[in-house]
Length: 340
Image (cartoon, rainbow, N blue to C red):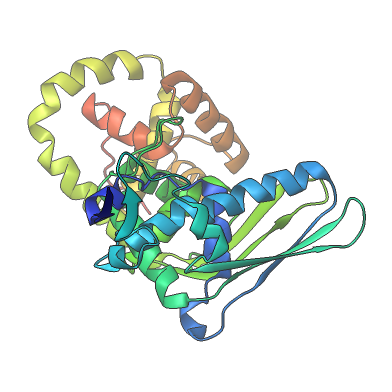
């Protein structure tokens, strides 16, 4: 008996899984920038040994399979799937689900050229920009709803990854209109907030370093993201005010480990963030504030040492979290008659 199988959208969506940071970075590096909407960026990569080749092969495999699923899951694209309306004999099941993704991928094309026994040139490119953007938008939408799954890795929530990015952008005095991000772990938050039009990816480079490691250099413009994240964080603080008695007990135990000067550093960060009008409060700003107001004579390098101690004692990775903990414990210093 021969039957016609109707591959529905829900079945395709079930195949949508996580995209690794490196695969997502490769895909985004091949997409055109917003300012040059027509030009696609062919990504040429030279692998000099088998280790590099295998690493790149896994990354491309993810793009061709997991990421391509998001194109077929978007809108009515499921009707274009190679297994839509497939004819099966009774008792047969779908096999080699992703096979046609390599033979005739709707989004990507890959070309290999052997340069020597150990060296291979790989050209990764996008053959249909609109389909790639549809897939990326679908991925970002699911990521924003925390619906992206990975059976091997416990994924951070979208909010947690946004906070990581915010902490990176505000930790030091950088130019947010020309900010360089070198760590792959931020790529999901970057793509998601670009999807929301909260930041712009100005340029992105994906390659192997001289040390045989994959690198990603991403230059962004993120003023809008920082402003909106800070505004949203203020709203969250107000909405969680009813939980304060519970927070106080836990926070009190944690901040009891801090010295007076460490509490002053945290308090100064909180005060300057609210009153200085700056998007980014730097270590130097904190040092100047405490020294100029004769609260505590301290240098920028001393601030860095104190911050490292705060992180270790509270088991955190950013001063923003320290501010929240100290506030919850009613431990923030109230400054009067001070100069900003």
